[in-house]
Length: 261
Image 1: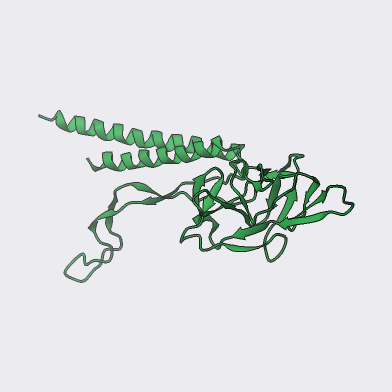
Image 2: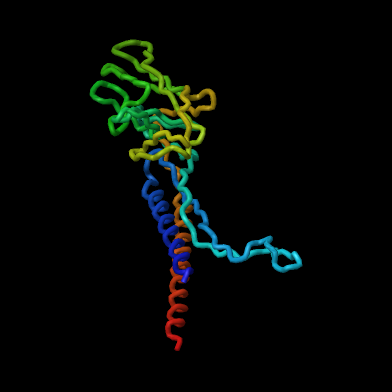
């Protein structure tokens, strides 16, 4: 019976939906995390009577047809790139982006990664790196003698060196943005890489030309709303249960048929 296979696609789709929701909930405290959602599409239809076809020799037409669908599939799992809340951390190398843009990161394989996670550190050479040790672009080195490191809204990094009375500019953080942010590919560790769908990165200066501004000693939190995720989880569970009931009902119908004498 076709209903068995149709309902099974619904159960599989809702199982995938629950997996996405669980990942959102698991990353509620992940810095700069962007939640995902599941978008569904119906599958192919079997047409028994086509709308608009002739229904008699007199040229009358069918106003509606007979089409039976074959189920559902997960069409896409886009990321919702909305701004997360910004929280203070009291750590001078933490930087939050308010608005458009990503930090550019040099990955171990030479590619450029992009992130909203601004929890930076200094490595053994004083270079600004991520918590995984990946270099932040453009390279900024903070000497051992640096005091009171400041990061301005436009990304300018300054510090007092030795006993200097005036600060020294050490470099300037740049931001990158994309025509289609949702087209970026997630590679873990709070990083994305560009794809053909995202388009090439457009690099610029923070606080200008539509790029967001930077806020030192703050981090952007995940844009996951616990109440929304729980509501979506309950809806997915109920949809799964309803598809399971369809399978149970179809099984009972097949059982009744098999018992006919």
